[in-house]
Image (cartoon, rainbow, N blue to C red; front, side, top):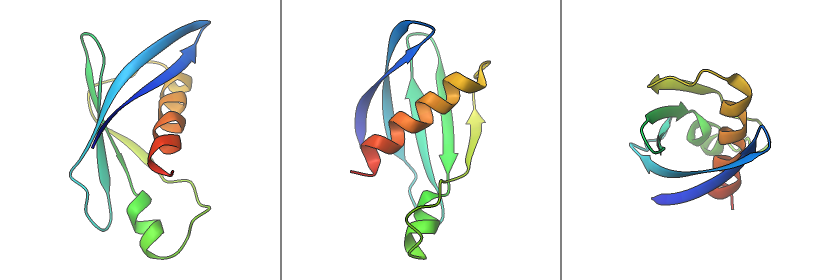
Length: 86
């Protein structure tokens, strides 16, 4: 599944292409594509959904790439969850 997200960070809007891949019963991975960078994030959201836990926030891990600012990473995670939890 491929979709776009927009986040506002430091007064500027940024748009990223996000691709969801490698989904199994425990984990899912997202590839975030910017102009010159690719970052892969992993969450354990499917594990909680399979157990019927809908209100727990998933744990995120950076698998590939690097994001230097943690607040920007949190904004990206929130935007991804808004799209996939619809």
